[in-house]
Length: 84
Image 1 (tube, one colour):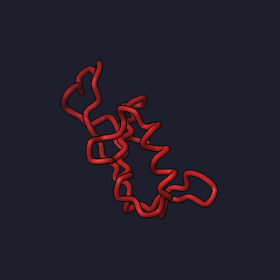
Image 2 (tube, rainbow, N blue to C red):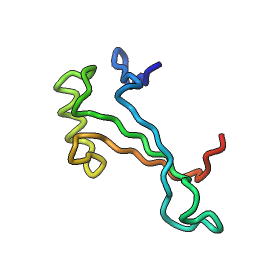
Image 3 (cartoon, rainbow, N blue to C red):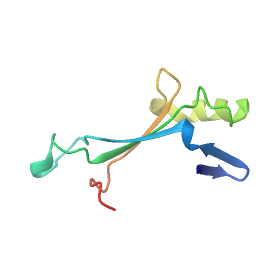
Image 4 (cartoon, helix red, strand yellow):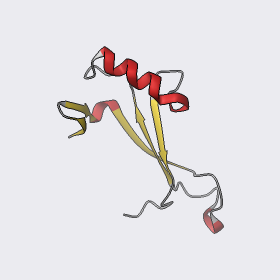
């Protein structure tokens, strides 16, 4: 399985990692105890499927989401639950 990001461009699962982390902000009785945010990590620096021009554009657009290791981190914390 892979993630299709554009026509003809798919990112394989091996370049992605998904984890649950603790979300900041109010959380009631679950605050600091339950991982209620989802973190998606894409290893841009080591991805072999994207052309260099696309990688350069992603680096330029990523801003603070780009780590020093060259990975893009996206954190979703809107729903704040692991149940779906």
